[in-house]
Length: 561
Ligand SMILES: Cc1cc2nc3c(=O)[nH]c(=O)nc-3n(C[C@H](O)[C@H](O)[C@H](O)COP(=O)(O)OP(=O)(O)OC[C@H]3O[C@@H](n4cnc5c(N)ncnc54)[C@H](O)[C@@H]3O)c2cc1C
Image (tube, rainbow, N blue to C red):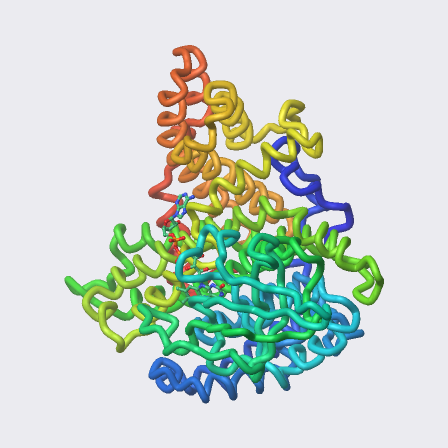
């Protein structure tokens, strides 16, 4: 277990993290592992036997499964004990999300309930409101839903048109508007609804399903996540008690964005589990499928895919659990019942916004790429419903869109870094790092800010390029620091993963940096020195590394960690 306080949010870019400050899966306590096993058992016994019914959109079944998950303690893991939960940490919560992911519809319903629906209330609700609703959500007696998006406002969430008006006697709010894409709608009893008081003060309200004036659209016909309920929530003169306001009027964006930060982290903890399963399924298939009198796993092109998936998954897993430990360092000790709990929760959920965004982009894009390659490894069979990879590919596609599309999240990484630097929270000048990716990312960031100044926001492509280099630096450091916790053959495999990930990140980084340097009209000397620093070492034989990793994956028919 880590025994030093982690660096503050974003500081990884300018400092090298002390190894003892970084949590990794090897540090899990027996109690947390037990909770992970409970989640895994639940999935195997209660969910996986019903995949066909789930895929056939049996929402009554999904509702039943959610209630059962509540009875099994899987909905209240992180809800404080004072409000009927188990008060477990983010590390354990991430492990639960990972273990539930192989049925992505169930995992999404679970995430929508436990994270984005529950956290606005848990973080910002009054003690009375939390006492009223949190025990029901933690036990699964009630299922929750998060109602932010609208037909005209998705990425631009604050552009919502739903309005709230306080009655003259100050006793209730009247809500009017339509929410779009709301997960769990078919069976949710409680909605965290975002609306603007008097048309301009963005605020959050708890709305019960049975309130007069609440109605629902038809189920959306989706590409994937077919077992989830996704409908419009229509609010026509819906009266909710004054006390159902969550937090302060005009501060609803705190509730929305804090919940979304945590959602980004949790979705990608789930992705870790889904990609592990994908890799295992692919390895087994590559061993068994013969062409040209050889198993297809013996071909270099197939090995390259397996090797790269393995290395990048090790990077994602290391980053996700490092982040879980970082989050726990700021959530630990918050008294959920204290009058100022909201202030502390707000600080905690915001501190690692950069890292939450990093894992969101890295995880969702790895999941997309890995499931796409999984179909390729399965050939024509992968294109059928006979094998699970087609469903995994369809389902995961949502992750690049939901909880902040990646085009929105990439700029958040850079904008948050620059904002914190401006506020004096983080110095981007005093670099104390030996990491090539970090140093190059910082140099590019300085070049961009100097060259574009106030118009930097219009340089999204360049911001995206720099955010990718910075993100790979966070992942690479997370995996490199994890190696020392492993032993023997596994440690050697971790070394191979880390070397390959660095090579791939630097190769991609050179192409990204080149575009940014040209865009900034950087002089020849700066261009040459930066590209030279970022270029991968010619001594690294990436093909050999992928082959070695693939051999390990094929031998065990699973992710080797
Ligand atoms: C299955 C499913 C479940 C969902 N569940 C929920 C839920 O439970 N609760 C909820 O509130 N919402 C939910 N959503 C909505 C989801 O959060 C939105 O779809 C998402 O935020 C994107 O919004 P949009 O669909 O309106 O796309 P838009 O915002 O219209 O974006 C379209 C494209 O333009 C890009 N774009 C937009 N603005 C910019 C910009 N400034 N710079 C660069 N590119 C930009 C986007 O990245 C995207 O590629 C769900 C959606 C789906 C599909």
